[in-house]
Image 1: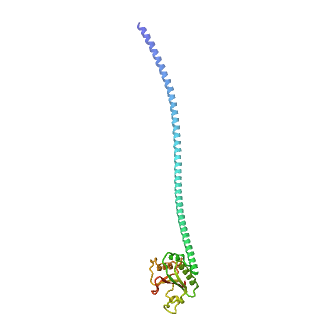
Image 2 (image 1 turned 90 degrees about the horizontal axis):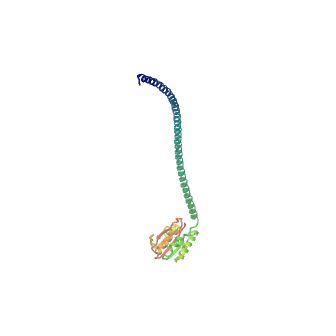
Image 3 (image 1 turned 120 degrees about the vertical axis):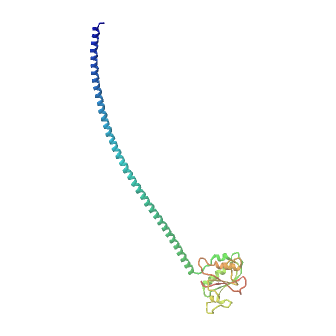
Length: 267
């Protein structure tokens, strides 16, 4: 092939290469513009979305702040409510304690009043019984039951009907227990010589001033019960119920063993 042919081929190739260069350059330019436009659109969209996200985030943060504030307010309200409830409970406990104290004082006052009422009733009953005639306690007969017996002279304060009636009751209890009794007789008709001042009352001249006096030949120990002396002394000691009329034991050595004098004096 000649040089002219090669030159023609190279010229055609150069023109073709130039055309391709221009074509590819133009394609690259237009393609780049399209890509840049798309990237710019995407960037604007990204910026818009970012702005919206920032706005939404700001709203969420504001709402979160408002929620925190409301939560703080609720917590403060709950704290105030707990404080008020605790104060109310403390006040209720205090009032309950005061109520219990008042109830206890009321109960104590009622108990004291009941005791005072019972004591008053007992005193009234005692005064009523003391105002009336003496009554022989059933314990008098119980003290004699199953014990050794003896003989007893029963005397009473003269011209005293109440003493005479009580002496009859004493005689009946002694006889039921197997004792041998004489009387009741007034002290003025006694056989022993009166003692003391002859101008004193008969009861005092006989050596006693109590409502009920037992005379034995010796002073009887209180713990002695299994003998006629101990039995009748125990009975005399138990003669009265609820009222301390008084009883005495004196000694007259002239009396024989197992023989006693029982004087019913004025009450």
